[in-house]
Amino acid sequence: MVAIGKVLRFTGVSEALDALLREVSIQLEGEVVDILDAVGRYSFRDYTSRVDLPPFDRSAVDGVATRFSDVVGASESSPIALKLVGSLDTDSMEIPTLGRSEAVLVSTGAPIPKGADVVIPIEYCVVRGETVLVYRTYPRLANISLKGEDLVAGDLIVRRGTKLRPWHIAALAASGYEEVEVFRKPRIAVVNTGDEIVRGVIPNTTYFIISSLVKEIGGEVSYSTIVPDNVERISEAVSEALQLSDMVVVTGGTSVGSADLTSEAILRLSGAREVFHGIRIKPGRTAGAYVVEGKPVLAVSGLPVAAFVSLNLLLVPILSKLYGSPPEPKPTTTGILTRRLANDVGFRSYYRTIVCRDRNRNLIIPLKLTGSGILSTLIRSNALLEIPEEIEGLEEGSEVVVTLLGPIVECSELPQVLLDIGLPHF
Image (cartoon, rainbow, N blue to C red; front, top):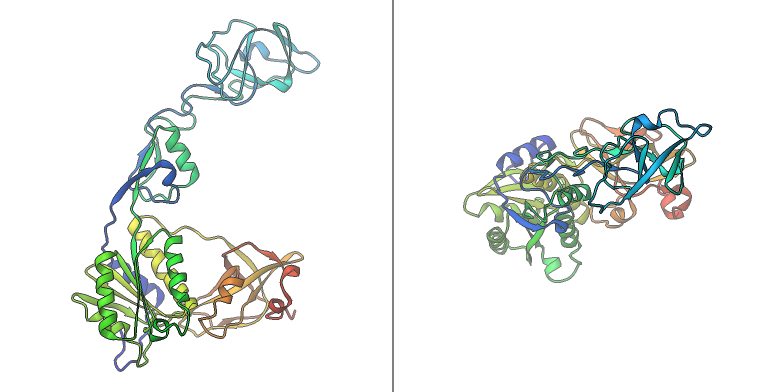
């Protein structure tokens, strides 16, 4: 699928992703962790509740537990008097049985006395010695959390592949789990190539952005190295990385110049096969994907923005496949585009933008690019605008949808230098 004579043949995004995912055959094992260390991890198996939650009928408010039939018709003008026969707290063990026109003071979470079928909030009651006056009627079972109302023993709490959130942890803990089996984190190696970073001529910012992205999406960096523009050295580094990792990311050397040796170096490895080299995205179009015995090797640009865009597109679906979990939805918003954006038909373009609030509308301000090595576009932006392959461009003043990467800001709070990038002309 790659061109002959150092001319790339670009593969469509959907086709490239489908082909890559078909080739990935990594199997992640499970590992048992403390329940508080499981948040953000992916469950390795189904978990069901071991108990009924709540374990007994309990009060949902501070109030007076009584029989519904004894308080029918109670109102501010005609309160009903009940005999107070005790009180219950959350740790009470002895549960009384109510007779006719009797009541018990209960705190939130306390068990419901036998025979009671309604709780009147304390603010509608007046206690006078052993008598309580009720000033309001509530329906039967009002303000009572019934046994098993939340979860019944055997109910599913999480499925295999679920990303564990704080509420999952709370439900698991309430059900008696102290440890949880989760997928181990995928081990991802990073091999940076380029004489310029070996000699320290330019900082290796791409390594830091890739390593941080790996950790953010749930992986761990298992190996990293920097090698010069040399086919043998690159090939050796990738081979070593594969021994220590589930997948490898190689930065630099992905284009078609004389120093762009990454593809050749990877294909020298035994069993290596090319999935694609060249993908219809901008920035990041020179990215390539290879497979060595089921393990993916992703080759991306050495420029940080291009590397970030292409890896976001390729790595996240791979991890989702490994966990058996669909990608998490991302928040979006709409706004008015402040200047025209062009697009090469056939390519999916990604623009970093600023979303700011101006009176009663959002403005979408594209950041001007002078190349895909400009880190400031990543720092300043709070949204990503995607232009599909079939669209020639987006016109100034059109309403567009963007994916939010940070909070929306007020336009009046932006520095003038950023406002100068793209103020509306309408």
